[in-house]
Length: 119
Image (cartoon, rainbow, N blue to C red; front, side):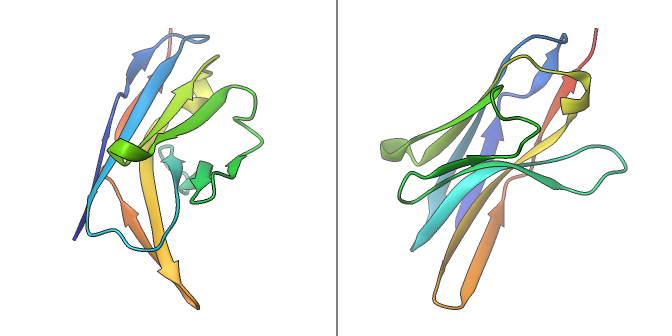
């Protein structure tokens, strides 16, 4: 069993910063990537950023230059530093762990953490 626990959400003013954490535990084999998705009210869940097992990092265009993803391998933890936050960043942020092999990928999700950007 794999457990994913996020933390760090909250209320912040436009232009402010927050740091999200995602700790993974349990039986993790063949990790492909860890990253973040978000879902705003009435919207589909969208990808934000990920870091792969070989440390390749990718960001969605709408957060590039403002968000930074990083990883602490010893703690099996991924972080998302969010700067210059905008009201449109308001969403529930979900941590995602992908594992798999040839021809299959398993996704594991956390419970989500609310980020609200408002004055």
